[in-house]
Image 1: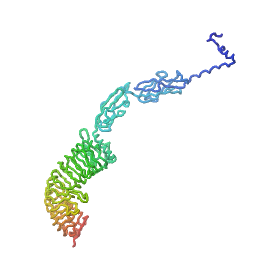
Image 2: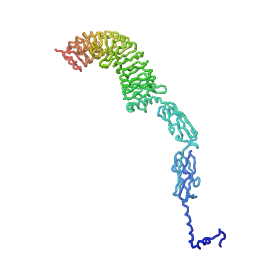
Image 3: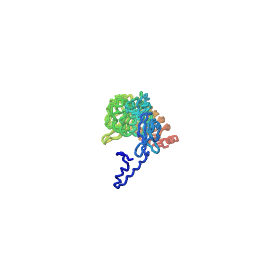
Image 4: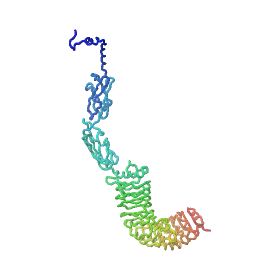
Length: 618
């Protein structure tokens, strides 16, 4: 039956026109290929979970070659790190349920046959609540650490690691904190350590109290200036207490350990002093002698409130700045302070040493130091009179005004051209008096015999007549009053123009060890009372006009090591008692004196290292 209507046309009716025209009938199209599973994709391809126990549903889609989804295909699910993310493929057909287990990253894989698809899963806990612990113990040393154990929780109430928090410190000069909550002490004080999670903030106070911290930082600056290896070899170990470091003395002050003494002689220090030394607020003693420190001492050091003793001798220091309110001892010997240097106002000064600086002017400021006990200006180059006002420094124990060796210029001699002020005899506490190597003239004041505590009296002269000068040096007799100096150990009167005999009263100086009378015009015989000086170690009588024999009493000088009798008018054989001087190592005699020839004297002479003299003729 043939269908009527447009929708009822048969295939033959449709082909009729084509065949009538002589065409080729069309070929039926090939049937389409059956769908083939070609690709597997997982949606979403990446997921982040912010709390342990959170879940996410992953969907696996299998696509054919035309990109059409195929239904009903079997899918299996797996994870490469089940400790981070677990996956369950049975909850919903074709889907995988991922559960957060721990922070980290995992790859979840869906597989169907040979096809696979993946999703990157990240578990990153996000703290929604933070609780602060109790404050940790005080940190006792710079560099010490403590971990602040903040308690943070995610949305499911699981603990969140510290690294998930944002950490801050209120004062990084006291304590710094890293991204894990590890706090490191940086300076004394307290700091607020905060952990931030979203809108949640928790904080705890961390206290730092390093008993040595402040002063250790200063010493480390000094260590870098001197050289870590130099001080490291001497025990400066930053990992140990500064109280164990060479040259460092500490004391406990309340809750702090402070440096009170810093003594680093000959430590190979070069360059200027660090200003940071002014932060050693408890420092009482600073001894840096023998180093190549240069420049001016910083004012910060001069402001130290408790500094009592400062030694910078044998350095390249050029001066000081600052008031030094508590300074008692100042030693700038052999430095570069300048020939016109004068000290400032130091009301508490007890000892001042400016020796070996070739000073051209007497530092008059010393008269303003009422507590002064030691004044050492030896090796100066100033001229003029010895100030009698020195007698006003009634606490003086040592007075050194010895001059230098050489002239400044061809027409000016070095040293003070002066008599000895008798007022010096009022210095009742004086123990050492050095006036030698000056152009001393006049007589020795007998008032010096009143210095009952004197141990050293040096009036020796080193100068010779120069450019027509008739004489240099003290003249007149040796005052017998010097025999009152019962504590005297050294008497230096050499190279003067002293005349007359040696006072027998010098035999009362039973503590004397050194007696230098050479190069004077002394005359007469040697008093036998000198044999009472049983502690004498050196006796110089050479280059004088002394005459007569050696006294028999010299046999009592059993400690004598040096005896100089050359260039005198002495004569005769030595007394047999001389052989009792068994400590003698140097003996110089004028030829008119002689040593007898017998076995006792032979053995005695053999024991003398340096012998200049003659043997008697039998």
